[in-house]
Length: 188
Image 1 (cartoon, one colour):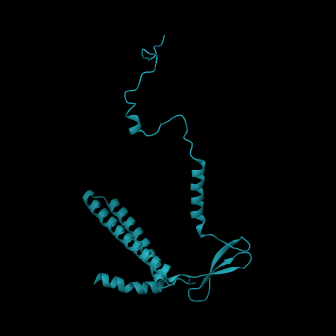
Image 2 (tube, rainbow, N blue to C red; image 1 turned 30 degrees about the vertical axis):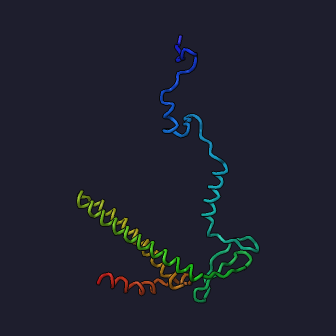
Image 3 (cartoon, rainbow, N blue to C red; image 1 turned 30 degrees about the horizontal axis):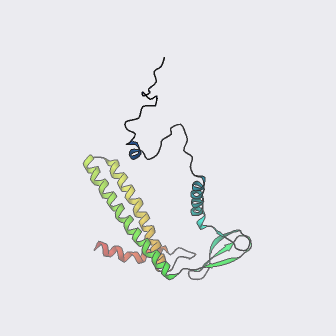
């Protein structure tokens, strides 16, 4: 006959750690019961995720079709054109918003540049300490990826500061010419 753990009163024995349990584990763990998530919370998360993905899609107010970006011949002129009914909406940049974006992109560019430089220097020091060529190559690769992203952000900041965002042909050569004095002053 199996012996049951019961007190003199016939009750189950009390766990001596019962007073510590609420502080250590604030919720009950049920290993065999699956935790049910709040359906409304999950739906709101999915709707936020979908809205962040679909944020760049513009819908025509007349026919509910998709609108596409089209650059025009004018200086910095662009518009959104409907694919089915030829409805168009001009795009313009607010100068205050453009300067804010320019400063934000420039700050991000500087941060990425210095993080990439730090990663390359740290990897070279670790590789000299350990004698590993692959650590050096990995650090240089990581640093170069961050430097390329930094250059892209710097280009975008230049575009917004000079109000040259919506152009048919990319003003990449003008950006390089404007950046040349920056690199000459850094090396001197």
